Amino acid sequence: MEKMEPTNHPEPEKLAGLIDGALPDTERILVRRHVEACQSCRRALEEMERMVALLRALPQYAPRRSFLLDESHAKQRPVGSFASVYASLAASVILALGMALSLLIGGYGPDQPEIVLTPEDSRVSQESVQGMAPTVTVSAGMVMPAGVGAGAAPTVTMSLETPASAFAPGDRSVSSSGGAQAAGGVSRTTPSASGGQEPVETSTSSSSDYTGTLARTLGALSLGSLLLSILLFMRTRLYLR
Amino acid sequence: MEIPNDDELVRRAQEGDLDAFNKLVERYQVQMYNLAIRYIGDPFLAEDVTQEAFVAAWKALGSFRGGSFRSWLFRILINEAHDLRRRHVKRTPGSLDQILEELGEFPQMGDPHIGPEETAVSAATFKAIEKCIQKLPEEYKLVLLLVDVQGLSYDEVATALRLPLGTVKSRLFRGRCMLRELLKDSGEL
Image (cartoon, helix red, strand yellow):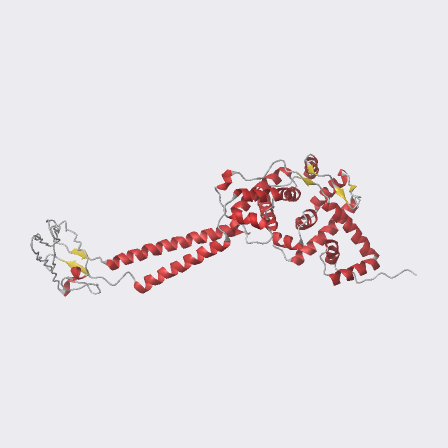
């Protein structure tokens, strides 16, 4: 009487695993036991083993040329490792956030007075200078350079009297005298081409302005750095399609 | 003199050492070229793809995050081959024989032997196998070439092709089954 072949054949992948030695011990024993009892599986396995042996023996074709890179490729240095790219990206993000935060909290420094002088309303008087210091008279629409004389630096006192009506509502301005000096800055006066009939705008700058400029510059630099890091990051990702 | 392993050479190459990278090229160029030639089926395009793959690997070395360097290289090669096909390669009907003729003119490394008895296998048998491989669907052909011809492990293939391990196994077995039928039909099995 012919022996009955088992019907519960192993999954095809397991036959492949048997050839490659990729099955766990227990599974390998079970599949081997089945193959010994199952003629069709045994035949399939033998053919497969023969074929895989042929594939593994296929000759290797020798390249007709070498693929070594030359010095021209040395200039195209490998981009930084993923760790360094991530680190630079993180540093840039932190820097950009820090700068943005400092700008939001600190603004561009404390509000600075903006002084508008008109020839009628303002009277820039003068200055008391001690000793050898020259006398400087500043009138609206005209600037006399200070510190022309030799000797000690002159002390310039500017007295500003400006009525409240000279300022538009909402203007950030002051009506105090000596604002520019108090701020420790240098007055800049724009001469009027029409002989002083138009308002002359005088703004003050201070160390806070320098801080603001510095903050803006650093902010721009950090944002630029962030963009560069993102580009670098994307470039490295391209090769991992 | 101790031969540096892949990890050591990769580390040096990542620092810009081209000589270290070229040692890796020497180590893998035959395997890369042979995968390309069998996957693309054109020895001349295979050369271009292999060269482009090594250049791309050099440029992208910073993105290598460890693991099997060989898998990573093969992945780049396969990407380059896909790009090439998308760009301009259209196989003309009937060119397979011509390609096999061209392959026959290429120098082969070592004598082909098979089995424990070192039985020589005829060139005609290998030619028939090459021909049958070219008839396999792309996805099966690639897995079969990587496992059975290039000798990569399942894990390495899964990494190179970004496929789940189970998919690699099933494609491999289906590819083997198809190839077995093709070889039986041609009288080689």
